[in-house]
Length: 206
Image (tube, rainbow, N blue to C red; front, side, top):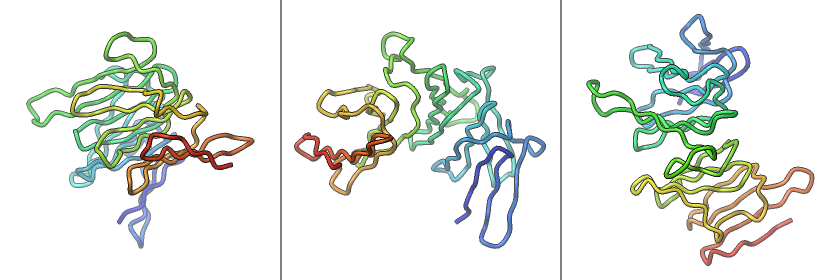
C-alpha cells in the first residue's frame, strides 16, 4: 500500500500517514530518479541518471549497480522487474540491459545487453524503450521509437512481426485489453489510438 515518488531530488515514500525520503546520503545511487518499479518480492528498484538502485525494505538495505557491474550505461531511463527474476534497464544511448538475478546467494547475477549495435540473439531494433508491459499470455512487450517488440521469456526469442508492428512508430503508451488485444496511444500533435484486434487487424481511432 506504500506509494513511491521519484524526482530530481531523490525518492520519497508515503505509507498513508508519514513520509520518508531517500537521497544519495541514504544509499540511493543518484538523486535524479526517472522510474521506480516494484519487484515480485516487493523490493523496490530505481532507474536514475547515475545507475540503478535496489532497495530491500525488509532489511532497509541498498544495492547499487553501475557500468562497473555490467550496466550498458549509467543513464537508465526506465525500469521493470518481471517474474523470471529479470530487471530490464533501458539506457539513454547504449541499448537495454537485462539483469538476471540469481536464485541462490552463491551464484552471480547475469548481465545481457540488447541493442541495434549488436548481432545475433542480442540484436534488438527498438531504441529509447520507455514502456514495458507483461501481456496476458505471459510475453513481455517493449515500446520504443521504432514501435513494439515482443519477448517470449520461455524461448527467449524477440520478435517484431509486421502483423503486430504499429502503423505509427511514435508510441506514447500501450496496454492490453481483457481479451489480449493491444491498445496503443500514438502521436504528438495529432494523437491517434490504434487497436490491434484478435484478427491481427489494426483499427484506427482519431
